[in-house]
Image (cartoon, rainbow, N blue to C red; front, side, top):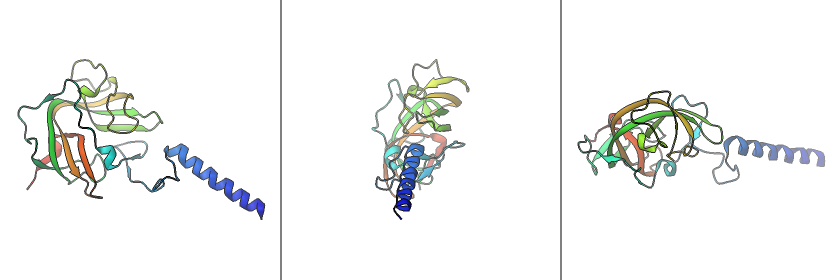
Length: 195
């Protein structure tokens, strides 16, 4: 009997250890094994997101210029039609900033080995010492953005580039009602007028 109890304990410890290694999370922490999962478009591995991760300090990257002529003015409301993260698509957003820049989709590998493909969005001002915008697809860059865990300092490849207006927005997620502040970034094409 003692042998079976010992084997059972070893098995449970091994399962928890494997979970911790694979996910980088403590399974004993509150809600550790129950989490929302999101896959960036064509991502190889699932990535966790929370309202806290979607929020930012609102700090603007050096050199980023405010947009002078925008479809959506700061303080106005718009509907998000993007599903970068759970609870975003269809949410009512308040515009907290509007900027003219070059926006990129990028593919990169986090420090814990997760391969993220076509992440939307990183702007030119969030790249480390980039050449003049716009950068060509295939260009290798270093990210100076912390939109997601494991992103800041990662080596990345440009997948696409577009010169447009990007918005920083505040919204409540449609699935849990959590408040997201200063989310970076939503493009003009991903917003529509609120009723």
